[in-house]
Image 1 (spheres, rainbow, N blue to C red):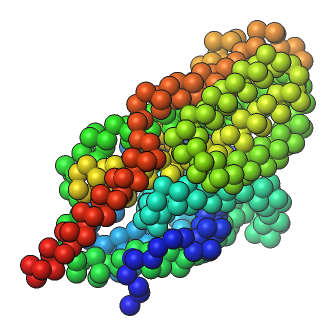
Image 2 (image 1 turned 90 degrees about the horizontal axis):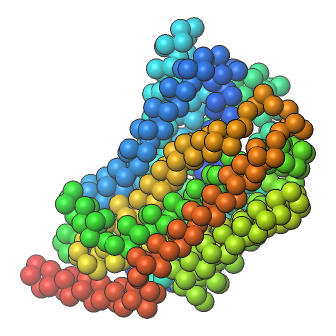
Image 3 (image 1 turned 60 degrees about the horizontal axis):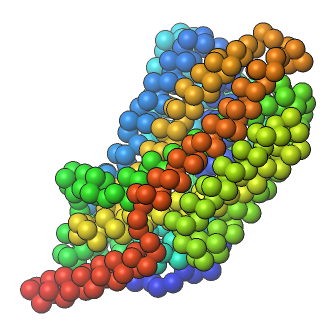
Amino acid sequence: MENSGSKKGLSKSIRYFYGVGDMFYALMTSVYTYYLTFYYTNVAMLSLGTVALLTSVSSIFDSATSWVYGAVINSTKPMRWGRYRSWLVALTWLLPITSFFLYCRIGKSETVATVFFFIAMIASRIVQNFPYTANVALINVVGKTADDRIQLASSRATWNNASKFVWSYVGVPFLAILTTLVTEKYAYATLAAILSVGTFLGYYAHFRMTKGYEDTGAEERANVAKTKRAKTNPMDLIKALFANPPLLALIIADMAKWLFNFMVAGTVVYYFTYIALNKGMQATYTLIIAFTAVIGAYVSRYIGKKLSGRKTMISFYFIMAICLIAARAVYTNVWAVIILVSAAQLCYGCVYSCSSALYGDTAVYSEWKTGKNATGWVMGLMNIPIKIASMLKGIILPAALAIGGFSAQIAAEEASESVRICIANTLLVIPAALLLIGAVVMILLYRLPKEKVEQMQQEIDERKAMEEAAAEKKA
């Protein structure tokens, strides 16, 4: 039997390698991000209307169910290796299968192929989201203090951002090799399956390195007090969200971070095409921002400990907004824009990790206030800002370009000044405004300082000790 979840402090493997699974997860989902639509239109030969229907319906399903995974993890009996650790291995062996069929057309009928792809999409989302939610929940299980959670979130974010480097060297070249080996028809499926194997192995590494930090399923079930705290019902989950003002504020403010990321990523190609008039420079820009994001994620463990996650997030939101506004002032100076946006991306790497730790703090607040440990549910709510921001980006970006009079029919060299200004505003001003709103929300509504979190954790620990002592005495 494994050790009880009583380990204190973070091991070296956790300090520096917790997040390797996230790197492979990001690589696996990069195939989806970069190639799914192209595969459906150019390889699977589906009509544009079918592709739009398929991707939109699956995205709506994903957004609508993003809260379910944490709820299930918290509301069902813990499995053999613990309430959270078990999910790192329970379904991940299915990832290569679901990923492969996501890029594998069945039959000649477009209707049959579409139904099959939709089923594969839903299955893939389910198989991905359970271990993802458990993985982020473990930040709060393994990290016993606010500083530990900052350290874990920083390590995870560093590995996650490192995936951008790996993808730049693996994505296109590896796909080209696979195309020659298995033909284009199966190259995308093979690439996704191989990277999914990496995700399985990465999550298994997390499973191994967190051994002893969480009670096994048998240990939790044998402890009446722990079982009562850990088992939640729908009302407990509702309280964990709506009786948790810091969590509600964080969800709103976190959308600003994701909208910055999605808006900049989606608009930058227009900048290099219509303003810089040099699409090739985007490759240089991509490499620079990947480097700065990794630096930001790594140094966040030191900055977050010094300032606290809340102060770091607020401060860096303001700095990011200032960088973007300054870039807008000199938007025709390409290298100035690259440097300033890269500086904002460095800050993004930092707040990316700090926000994960802050969700952990709100889970502590929830347990302190309600007496129920809803960590999986609370940490799983990190998905909501991502999904909503992704949908909002899909609305804001085309709407902003349309308002500015953008037309793909106009040659880049002939684009009017108003179109270029519109692109600059969409790339720089809109994300800056959203970041300022996020900072204000954090200042006014997220009132959960580090000292208070530590005090609440101490009170929770004392309460647990008393409950367990009473349960043992009663037994």
